[in-house]
Image 1 (cartoon, helix red, strand yellow):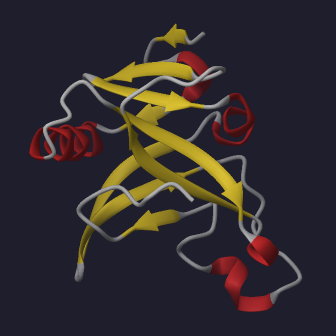
Image 2 (image 1 turned 180 degrees about the vertical axis):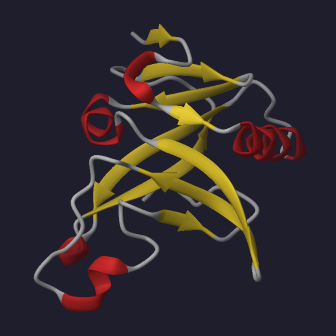
Length: 135
């Protein structure tokens, strides 16, 4: 069973620009009723990694948020790590992508440079026009 929340619940923030991109992706794929799923997965020595995918169904234990007409689904295990995060769309020299900023992340591990990469939880950036597949 899912719980529905509003924009301010749990501190998950989706920027208007990111919402526009999500809505465009959903429309282009004929999935206007689908949701954006945000999740956290194990990432080896780099720690936890963020992921986003399109979800057509709510799973048991999902929390559901609504921002700028975009449904966001987050499972209970991931919610504890992403609460307080913001999702934005950033443009760069090689195109645009989603960026997740999490003020609760602690950067660093014993593995050297990989802990500071763009795909680390404290600055996940996805340089594609769509959402990466769920891992």
